Amino acid sequence: MKIALIQMQVREHATQANTGHGLELLRAAAAHSDLAVLPEIWNTGYSLSHLEAEAVEEQSNLCSQLKQIAREQGCAIIAGSVPFRSHGRIYNASLAIDKFGRLVNIYGKAHLFGMFHEENFFAPGEHFDCFTLDGISCGSTICYDLRFPELYRRQALEGAKIIFVPAEWPVQRGKIWDLLLKARAVENHLFIVGVNCVGTFKQQHFYGHSQLIDPEGNILVCGSDREEILYGELDLAKLDQVRQVLNVLPDVRPELVKVPAGFLKKETGL
Image (cartoon, rainbow, N blue to C red; front, side, top):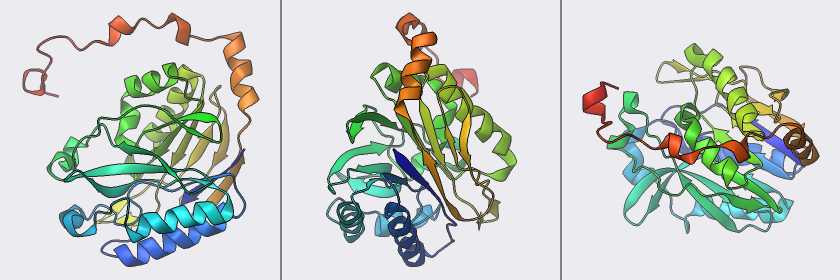
């Protein structure tokens, strides 16, 4: 499988320009790929005060254009994430579209970033299940989710072979991005596709360094700190080989990840 990682610059207060530019990059990437991935909220960026006006729905023009690109190019799309309205609530949602232009999964970001008070703008996602693209079991996560390994373990136990991580990850925590992408791949014996933004947004500098990591933690593709489309080959036979040598998943004890009673933010100070 040939995969494209679209590492784009997201501009502030420029939703129309971001959307047009992102779709342009997506068309270019899809023409040479089986699967193309965009970064987190690539169309609006973190202009959260405008979500009510800018959130999209499945029948929106943006979703229609994404589906059309997938159909025309025969390329599956992980549309990074976009502000998405569903049942009267707005989610930071990653849309998975197959090569026939069908929306096959909507993943709402599970872990909202308290430092930026995302909970005041987005509803937390409640759907974490895997989905299928081209016969391959996949999982979606978004940015801050990377710090919560139990989400990745759950999807791995459900059979995920690829997990996507669209992000707007800052440069000052770049080493953590590098470390956690590898960790999530190695501990679950699967491919991790991390697609980050670049540039500056509200004085926040993004790290870039989008990466494709294999099940042994090898970096197959790694971007710079500039806008670019990265291409990589994903060989699922490698995953099977790794799991035949050492596979920790059958030895997981689910009872160890239960949250103890009384473990609340106000009590722990987290």
